[in-house]
Picture 1: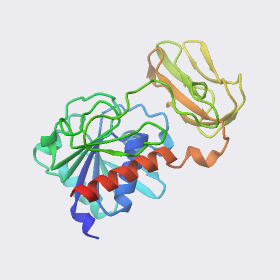
Picture 2: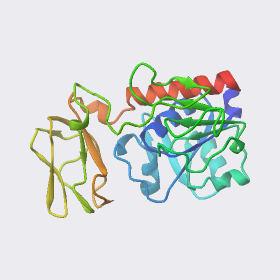
Picture 3: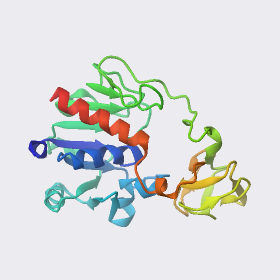
Amino acid sequence: MKNKHIQVCIRGAGELATAVAHKLHKCNFRVFLTEIANPKAVRRQVAFCEAVYLGSIEVEGVTAELVENINEIFAVWQRGNIPLIIDPKVSVLDSFKVDVFIEATMAKKNIGISKNLAPLVIGLGPGFSAGNDVDVVIETKRGHDLGRIILEGEAEPNTGIPGVIGGYSKERVFRAPQEGIFENVKNIGDMVEAGDTLAIVGGIHIKAEISGVIRGMLANGTNVHMGMKAGDIDPRGIKRYCYTISDKGRTIAGGVVEAILSLN
């Protein structure tokens, strides 16, 4: 119960940030999220950033609510939910002090954080140096070291190659073929076969390279640029995985919990 007194700010509310927020919330930390005004999540069913558009969203029994100011953060905590505020520069921290700050935008570079943001500052993935701009880095690359706490140095560099699931890597991810408006033909949770049209951008059809279930997909009407990740197919074909936090997310979240409890 004492963890309720530990306040945590997480910048970002995408898939991995959501996994971390969910785990910390279940462990009785007081968590709030900051986001940009127009997030473009792919795994929208398990991303708290969808609260920006919907007002609130539930992921595995935990609800995130969009708020407008600091006072509303406390009200949402009282309801047992996670507050989310649009504040990409985390200016809220100028007047709202937290015990832990987590950079979880997965920008793969430092976009403006330092160790003076909180007594404990954690960076997820590459782009940070533990002991310099952050206190701790959590490894986010799939493999033996996934979720490892790094106290000196950096995470593995971004390769741009998706992790292997069901024997497939880059084949399972589909991208925008050009700049334009993303038009859904299929939706998250749909079973597809290789060759099926998934979406259309400017008259160009995006076709599935493999068979499986659509685990993530941009929202219909999203503005995209050429090469932008637009979704992914899970070759295992298990629909439940579309609506639940991934093994990768849970492992990273576990590393964050360990870091906080061992260093506080």
